Image (cartoon, rainbow over all chains, first blue to last red):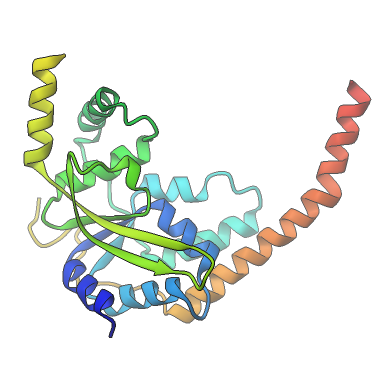
Length: 183
Length: 56
């Protein structure tokens, strides 16, 4: 077992891993019998983590599919990763509004509702849930901790850095307090 | 919030598809998209271009 795999297993073990849409899209585009994504998927299978998705991630992955055939296969892929979705926490309305205010203040411009919803899950379950994503620009270290980065080397085609993020309430509260004094 | 569960799922309840099955599904999806692209290029794009020309 490689160093990267064993280190990653140590970080994600016994955790719920919220798989961001970008990873699912990359998996669909690149997973084959060998290569970096096969190793990554195999590692998830071997680990005792539980991959999870949210209704927003499901929606984002399936949206825009024209043919029923393609949609059905994508649904099967989603089911293969993890059939169950997390329910929407009741805090989603209050927290996403606050996140959008914080993001606007920091000029983090590209974040969408699905990104804010990921933050809601991280904040609600800080000790249980890690976010796995390649979309690093929408998940700032000013409010999160990056606990591990797994590099997928896709056989000379492209290199993907999948990072695992954890909520840091202290960082977030400190930033919000500063903003409240400023704005 | 329960300390050991999220959505009542415990960490030993994982039921992911085997890698070979996921590879098969992903390849099937890529084939469908290739076919869709062909149909788009040979059928829909010419039809839309023709429509655009006739209405310009």
